[in-house]
Length: 332
Image (cartoon, rainbow, N blue to C red; front, top):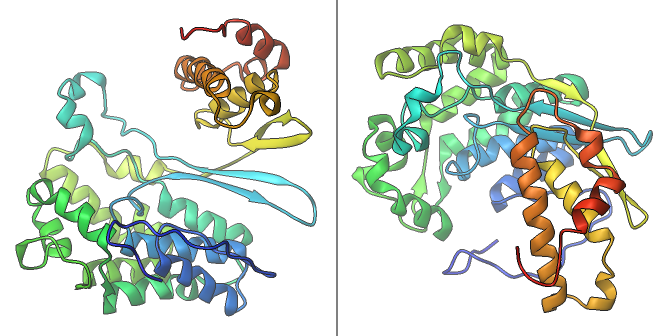
């Protein structure tokens, strides 16, 4: 699958009868497809795709991150949310982040990574394959290398100065000390070894084993905050989704602190407008959408991070009606 010189491709719609993989990189999508073709299920394929993105899209996706997984059971109609959002280190406090640069990068910026724990928890409950099989495509890409795309090269080139501050980053992503060019083959043997360790030992290696020890050692020697206790304490959590009814459809999202509540509230606000009559992308529609988005965003910023957010109230139709009354013909 080719990338254009600008890193963007416009393609015809793809259809299928038995499965579909969509991701930010064709090789990652291929990894998931390979797992499906070998008899794996959707969860196996999702984790294989995520692991492969760790290799071919490291600037956006990786085991140093976190997230949510929304799982739908077609046979039962059940929705489940797997929360593997990272947590702040116990030693973190606001005084440490007065400098915006400290917030953006460096050893004090990371939260406890949740992605690895989430992948393995999803496989434990719903996977049909062993981890070695699921991680095999990602390990292959890391060991043998993959052809750098235009988009890969652009992201790396735009961050070269920052990357050069970290010797391990230079060794893994800047061959010969400079950003790779489109078409160069980039191998990541250290990442391949990490993925192999995970495939054999599971998430325990990341949070309490060999990989954890390396993370803790780096943090201790470079002024970081994550400790052995922080890593060992991390546990993914299964949750019930939140949802609304919107024009005859049920729309689901993870509960707070996920930002999904903002988008459900936005839909509630827009439900009171005759969007079809106003027309797609007209000034009238866009004005109301923008104003509704402001209100929903304000509520998310105010409530989503608190310990016990008023979720039911924020998503009630009555609350949406009251907030909608604030939207006039002029921008607020």
